[in-house]
Image 1: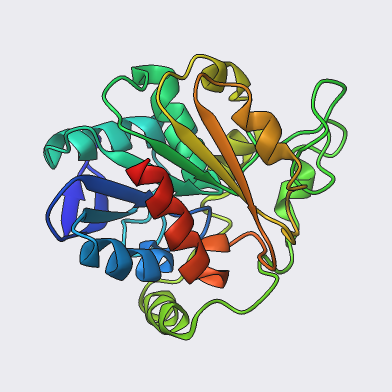
Image 2 (image 1 turned 90 degrees about the vertical axis):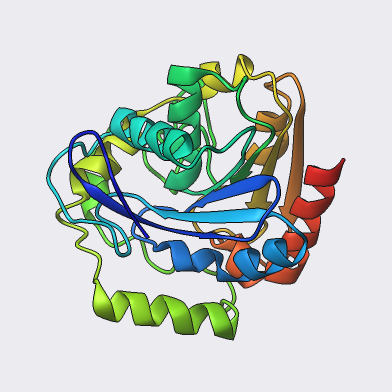
Length: 259
């Protein structure tokens, strides 16, 4: 389904099931179909499941407009309003998690139920205040390092059904990394720690034990920052935790939601 933002960019989303809404946001370069195993699982558990393609990703429109995290937050807010999502649960992987933090920085979290952050540090650049950045990114290498190939994001293969639907989308609408580079730079520049410290709603930080991008030790530290934080490190998983260990991931998130 299509949604046109206030700056006239067409996003793409799916909306299935009935019940409390859960909105899933993928990371940089990924399509909403990466959440395939979550969509089928949570629909079966009587939740309304929304998967969102942000601008330039998946089946959303490709554009040079609004490639910054503040615009990602506004897009998310407009989708929540348009779909009438009351007390949604937000789940984001990688830059999708940063999109949630950007939303919280502008709108707070009072209208949310719970938040799930998947393998994303709140600060991408390591310095004297934070040692859990993205790979070996520092102020000395930022932003030039972001132009380089990041290498493989996974530790183990993603589940076969998810791989199939993701491949179909990639064939229909290939991701243009160069076009979206300004968004990646803006994403990497941010520091969301102050936003987390002001959070009031329960939030869960999930990290992949074998993530090639982040040291999983960041998860319990981030969990301690807010009012009601929780952490879980999933073994034998890389950065795309929800598709590498989908069954375990789904059970962990379901238990958190129901708690």
